[in-house]
Figure 1 (tube, rainbow, N blue to C red):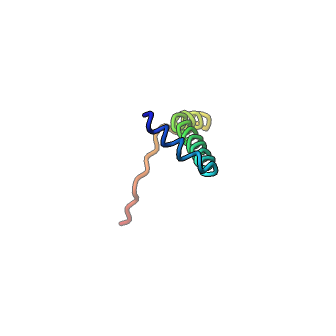
Figure 2 (cartoon, rainbow, N blue to C red; figure 1 turned 180 degrees about the vertical axis):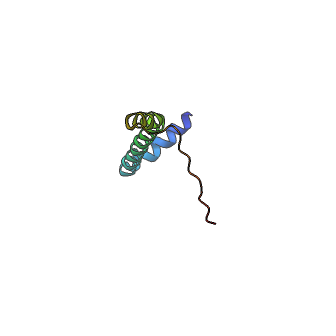
Figure 3 (cartoon, rainbow, N blue to C red; figure 1 turned 90 degrees about the vertical axis):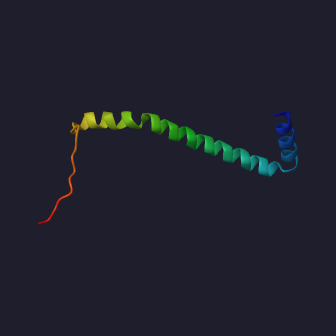
Length: 68
C-alpha cells in the first residue's frame, strides 16, 4: 500500500494540470454517483406519494388486443 502512494506522488509531481483534471473527474463522478444513489433509494417513495395524491388505481392490466 505504501508503494502505491509513492508511485502516485511521483506521477503527480510533474504534471499538475493532469492532476487537477483527474481530481475534477473524480469529483464529478462522485457527485453523479451520489445523485444516482439518492434517486435509487427515493424512487419508490416518489411514485407511491404521487399515486396516492392522484388517486390512481393500485393495479393496471394491459392486454394485447386480437383482431379476428
